[in-house]
Image 1: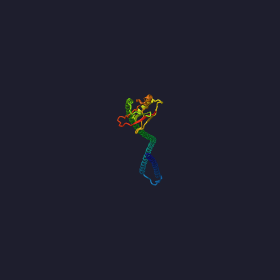
Image 2 (image 1 turned 60 degrees about the horizontal axis):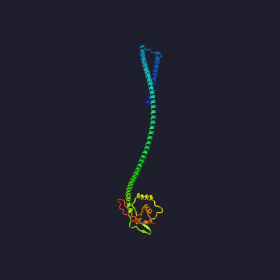
Image 3 (image 1 turned 180 degrees about the vertical axis):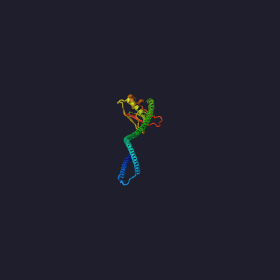
Image 4 (image 1 turned 90 degrees about the vertical axis):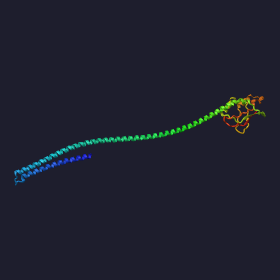
Length: 304
């Protein structure tokens, strides 16, 4: 558009210059024509005398030509003036256009600058969001891993808890059976002290006791026997060696040392054959529901 305005301004300038040149050329032609007519009228036709009528006709023609030349000159002046006004308007329009273009160019530069700034900020925001997304992904996978480990740990703890519960149930069952066996043995203690075996013999001054090879006592019963033994310790002078004859099956068990110590403290050489020193037969009592048979006897011999 600017190029078109420039070309239009150049055309207007050319038209103004051409009009000025035509005006100058027309004025020059009129001057030459008048000078020629004057020369012809003064000395060129001295021999010929023109009539007044012919002179008037020529004068009228010249006046008409002069009027036409004046009209053309005035038209050319008007065109020149009009072209100058158009040139002025065009220059003002071009100035306004230049100012508008400069303002638009400044606005465009501001827009481009703001766009570049916003684009940079958007890129920074996108990068920050990408980093935050990566961080969140890592945290998510870390939480998943921790949740899986916690689930596995909880499962392992649950398994251990189930095993402990089962073990506690087994121990409770064994404790109940031990209490039942202890109650049964407690009830049988007076009977065992009142019974005396007829097979009691004395060999070489030693007294034999026949006992069962193994008693079905649990750890709680044996601990109670040991507690009883420690609560009534035998006198060192009365402690005697105890010899157990081997049996063909299980490891032999020894009669409570507390009972033996009590017998030693209360015995005298005169009552060796008393019921307290007789051989006691302790039969094995099986657990409720157990079909295990009684074990064979073992002979316990007290030394001198």
